[in-house]
Length: 101
Image (cartoon, rainbow, N blue to C red; front, side, top):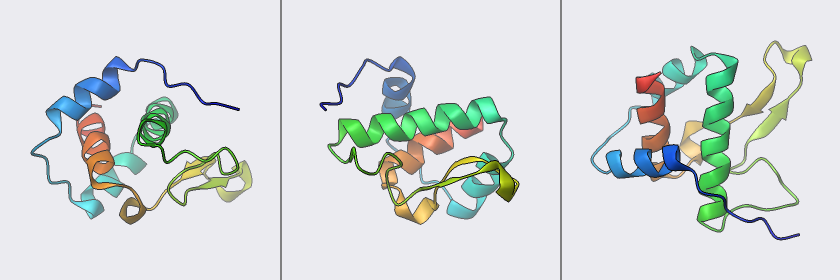
């Protein structure tokens, strides 16, 4: 199966704005953890888009960058990532999105 990259204007805008951003991993984790489920879904879409765009998406592992899927029994559900496992440019993009949210 070939994964085709679709245009994503939000991603493109954040890439343009993120060039000189130096996100703090601890603050970024706090910011992201305070976001609504809908905004977390947007962050996951940004992560997926980035992984596909940079040829890092693996069909056999649909959660990229060593992320894990957590079920609702853990108190949180959905994909979970460690900031240190994400590419620097992606942390910049997430920082900008979380800051705007």
